[in-house]
Length: 277
Image 1 (cartoon, rainbow, N blue to C red):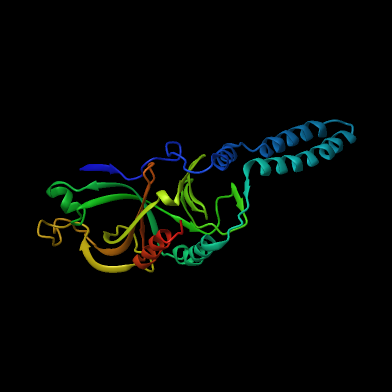
Image 2: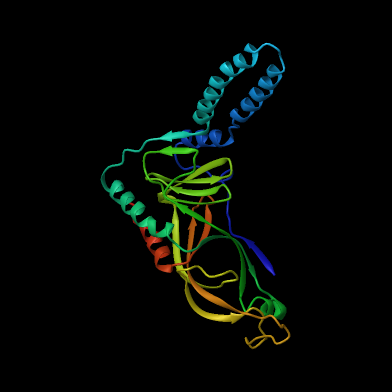
């Protein structure tokens, strides 16, 4: 089998295309280590030691000074872990972004969406038999879809967001933000290339509630495509038709996304392509 990585560059390698101040702030906020837990531990330990004293005023004084300190630490952590961005969008971009956010609710409502991380070409008779007759096998991660950005970004607008495992794409009015753990980069819409087509996928998991089943196959097949009788437990598995989205850029972005409803994936691709220059 020949494996192929399908993830492209992460945010540490992706060349930014917009102003860097926001990206630097987001990266710094993502890496910030909260002080509040340490302050709380210190207060508990100090109050515990003070409580052993015969002087009643000592633990009271510690708590009187420590609780306001914890409140201040909470405010300080919140300030350093969040980047506030305000948008005042007008004209054609505002109309387009309103259409994007309104229609994105259908993406949020999908029964299933996955990022394809790697694909493996099935080689040989044995591979064909144990893969249900598939030509390729994929490694994928389930995606969360939302109109709320990660907590690190505070903004006054809805933000179509696709995320998993602290990786994300955020579709802002002026650019696409790309997150890889604590690192951030971006892609200008002028450099974003989106393709979409329908693809049949042998679904190894319970199919999504809104998926389109087009056929079935056996988990283990013989060379003619029928069930391999050597396996006592050889259930039928569904073949689903998914929308297959590919988002790339010349600077290294490479996201492949399967969506349970092909028409929603097609709408999303068309909506991104319609962004005014």
